[in-house]
Image (cartoon, rainbow, N blue to C red):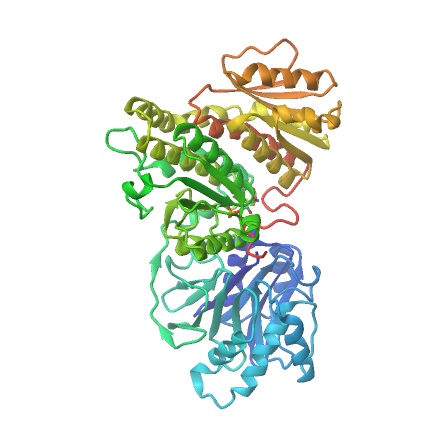
Length: 616
Ligand code: M6R
């Protein structure tokens, strides 16, 4: 959850590290810190709050070195205080360390170190790790030259249980960084006369596009002109250098007020990028290059299981609906965090999909490993190329929507909905879906970006509705079938960025309990569509109205609602069932965004949240 940056090269390290930390702030933002070696001590600046606070105090410290480490924290062990912020320095003053993850055996490690005379300034598990490196470093005094810090870190990690991405500095080798990962992402940036390490590519791309994705159990040693890789148990290994395909401007806000706003408005382009090159020449089905499964193998699957967390889980629910509707194959969806412990009985011919924008969510990763351990074939839908989940699956589908920086997922969600719709088509066409139905389906998907553009044009209207509802404290989101997950997503968006209490339900479920919440002070957002659900949803709306509840209706065009039933109306295009969830999502994203802005909330960095949840 934390952000990590390390730099060694010819430039002053601190300004580059601070720039990198700003780009990583979305990963955690309780506190931040930076350390550089300064002769016989480390110069450390750390402060609770945002990186901007750190910048103010960093100016007062003499952070002059050409090698350094920096960190943004999302608290796990120990409260949000300056002392608990990273970097931590060992009590003998020789080692500085930053850490993302959780050290599970830190109590016994700390006890051991206290007995050895080490002291502690913070409540963190990280400080125990830092002092343990210092303990081994002192013992490795006889190791000549280059490998002393590396060997000390290697020995330390053999005694550590838990997860980590760490970067370590020693006073004796002031231009050397040693880093290691297990469970928390770390990426090396290979530059010209400089090398970097970070928990996220976005902190590296302003300096280099050549990267090495560290795997679990690997260590790296970086100096300005060299880097080497090894494993915790064995010797050196060869590194594979990848090239990042996006540039720094993709991770910048441009003229928008927030990343979330930018990412909402980027959705037509994001959808185009997701589907580019993924339809058959005859225009009747989808193509996925990276599944590593032949059509014949895919055809044999009896069941699909989707696991994910948060917004990605909502995308899985829509995918379930579409696959069952268009391909008539049973689908199960589980929270990754539940699946990993549930030990569910599984049909032997099940194909697993793990959906995750970041590809680093620890619960999703653990669920994937559990399915793999049981011998199932596992595939993934990910946005971040080279992420841990992407590397551990047997194959998968990249979303290609570029970096998503806003903590509240928007463009990644609609892209996941699109991939779900394309999967339903792909599987459907292998079974009973006709050529003409397939062709109509493809044409509808290709038209989705333009439909999203027309809904985005209603932003000023939705902004006005948001003004009216910004002072309410509760809201219900109600939809049926494939729009029930969009109701869940609308409620989640509103909760996470505006701190309003919101709940999503299938519209007909409202009368089984949530109706007790309805009053003039608890408005409801209804998704209203044509077909057999129309009169049912209208009845649910009447029940709300009868209890003085206000209604915002998100309604497909061409429908006539009874007079006075909706207090506010947002009309969306009538479209193919596979596209409808995408189009219906846009108004709830905009509504949540404008409500949060009106309430003065920090939209891109909502309280208590982090972009990717890499701790359990
Ligand atoms: O990176 P992932 O898709 O695995 O993330 C899963 C959730 O943590 C994420 O969707 C979260 O719910 C977002 N804050 C939603 O906006």
